[in-house]
Image (cartoon, rainbow, N blue to C red; front, top):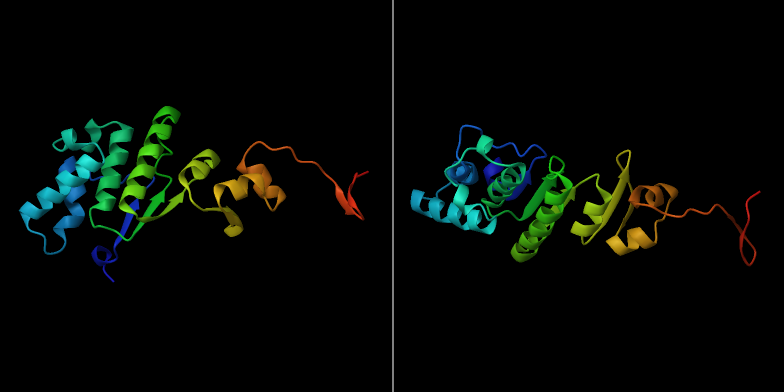
Length: 184
């Protein structure tokens, strides 16, 4: 199936914006493929720019934008095709911590408002727990544990998940009749 018909939005780690296209042209890129006329494309671009709070930046080029603004353009472009699934590959890794927290809250609100199934890849445990309904912790390409953020945080099923998910108190022990015994 050609990319334009897959109904999938993708936000790359590097945002992958077209440097020679304006914000409006970057958002509208996916809309040029298909049967939308120029007026309908313009309405959709304006709607997405407002949703991403970048409607005042439509005539600017990517090099004239901050990292947070570029991330919003990439998100608006990914939403342009009205996707059924949104894939985000570490979209906030290049942003400073303060902006990350603000944008992750805004991103979560947009995804919730639109009701789009979203797969969010991150190495930031705090971000994963804050953004997700379900979390899959992976190691070497294999899933270690899947669950809600609370299940993962409060009930890690392996040493790796416990260490990976954040600061934890790990106590070594062994199972004995009637409870847990000391090691050594």
